Image (tube, rainbow, N blue to C red; front, top):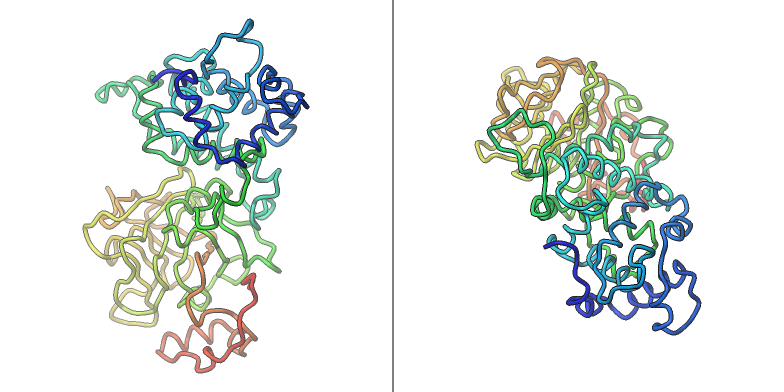
Length: 463
């Protein structure tokens, strides 16, 4: 470990890059260094100063992240010592840095990221790593917005991302294994060495994914179609279903990115708004009418104490007195903390939806058991509970709401992935204007006979 040694690996780094990628890097370095010469030998003698890097990036990234990227480039040890090694970033350093960030393993990246955390190198404090993580997440949200790459998500229609940046940074750093003695809870700011950083990068892949995206979109590097195939999980899913609606989502951009990264890969490309209480009304029947038979969903709730939480349902919601779903389901918290709680294997009480029965509980629930759900919304809309002390048996989640029995302030539901067959929206039936009537038919077991006769849906899927 230690700083990346270009002397023994420069050719290896070059060999990783496709010809078009090398040409892309050469062009960027030429622009950065102010060199217009066609000769590689001449341009290799040029260098990139911090001032030039800032001028090139402009407002695409916060200045603090530009400085961190520059420190990371300078951490690469050169094959030959230059007369003034501290002056500028050489071509060799630039190439090795990009190769390591885009295509390297945790060991290769650890020394670079250590210097990005602190340009002094050496062991760093957890508080410094948290500052780096906040800068990384904030820079990602900033550059996606700057490059118009939010895929239909608009900051004006979402909660402020400032708190979300902090929450996601804390979540990322919570996975860090520091040099702290596990039995010493009094050490608030433990020291982390390079092996801790390497282990962190190995176990928390989001750090490398976010850094690659910041470098790629900040420097506009390696943007060829071959480098970003459509089947790769996206940073943000494409958002639809907002057309004609002016509401503010309970989610912020970092929360969407984090929750989306935990969905099955085939469901990470698209989110579509199905239900929002501020738009469709505070009614359990309305809720059922908008989410039944619509495929996998992400539910988000906010209680009157400001806690935001929810769950992922891996299959279509059905109204029936039995549990449904599978082990891909999970619960999550957005505020005051960001976390995902996955299946434990204890029982199969993944998801439950029932209405209009006298002998079984009526409402929507996930995890736990009847009367003690990890998440429960009563059919008497507006009331719910999260009775998960000490933990939900199905998902190992804590109490998600501020109070065990909570009052619901707002709720929204997003369909994820492609709609199931027959669920596409075409020309409207008279029942489309009255979801309550549609839901009542579902509850008594009578579906709509004309559903399979509709014309194909619009491509954007907007409600």
